[in-house]
Length: 250
Image (cartoon, rainbow, N blue to C red):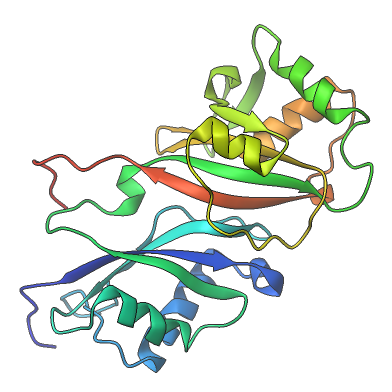
């Protein structure tokens, strides 16, 4: 494969919903790789004995979760079309459950989205009535009024106690109120379930990530309920990234 000295770097926001939410991260990556090949796009490849498409996700999405606010970085050869044309060509080879909703050409030297990710917004929705505690809004307010909200965070090697109360950056029970709190509009949402919901803004940095399942688990425990995670749907609405500095290099 010829050496590539220049690359056209893009950050794409995409939707993943419907039955496709049950495929894993690696299968989703293969899905995008095949769509790029079908679209005939001049994607950039790594060098070496086993070249692969230069593609990375801001944060892998858990199996079963849906999204309208996930991002994927893809690099193209410098002769490829402008972002709007790329999006149109790629969406023609994607599906009604997985498609690109925004694309941005990134400046030279930018770090990948995973390293710049700061926070994410989620919508947690009941899959059926009465999954949430009765009067859940008042009880969630009371839950957050505690002096601390300590959970046990487990890793492959250890577990530690973590106070997640300071990490709940914003919350609301209505989309419009949540947007007021975060100071911007969310992308158009395509949730699988509609109804009673809790919106959360949580940190997503590699050294400090809080998942909505951890917040909901602590909330259900506070309410004296078992808190079945299969009873609610997690939908990621948006991600926020740090602004690149002039000295940032990839």
